Length: 257
Length: 109
Image (cartoon, rainbow over all chains, first blue to last red; front, top):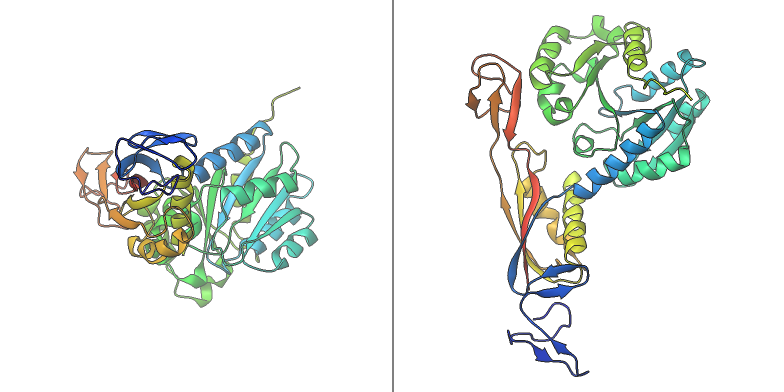
């Protein structure tokens, strides 16, 4: 059947429609691209090509404004918001931090970050398990971050799905809390393999757990050899300075004038 | 379940390339390191294609294996995922294959 006109287009040479128009079958043009009837059309296109292209536009947009964008990912409850609250409070006056909050429901995290003095845009994904480049593009337009600032994209708490979706960030930071167990990187290798920085969080709880920090660090060395690993406690403050330094070192140097 | 979003991306990409076409088969390439589960794609493909030009299309999936090359000693090997370690012990490894997530071709009615 002809897909465009709905006719029983078995006549390969083409046919006359009731309205008098001639319809050519075989290879021909429809819409803005060529296709053939009953034929294999080679596409060889990346499934996420559109997301990747939009992420590229986000990245250009951020770069033009000298904005550092960080995609913060972890399982739910690893301490992303707590880390950000402390970061925003302690670096206030030094850095302007805007936050894009991704959660399935509620504006609870957005409220916390607003209370910490940040500009915030909340994205509720509903049933969605990750943020994508379109959501972030729209959120950036709403957030309207000033040039030279930091934008932290707090992804939906999930160690699986967000790993696949480029948002246009400059760096991916993945949190693994010590209460989750030292085997998290091995269990969720896709997420950790994409990280530029891994923060092992809640280290103030180490005395009460059997968490093997050396093993976790060694596993990360093989799964994600390029990643920096920093143990940190956002509650007690241990290691927090190294995280601030990591952030400071990555802020784009602004062109004069 | 990002596979539903992946299946929707397939529908979106095919519809953009071939607007108005009725698709009878989709051939995907999903590498074993891509982070996408082929069975989950099969599970939600009908849901994602419902009411589109891809409705009723059959789904063919090719799954290229993981393939790595060690940057230290040059050996090419199939990694014991998730620990991508060369037999020589180096973790400095380039992934040559297995990360594919592509629409190879479609059949148009």
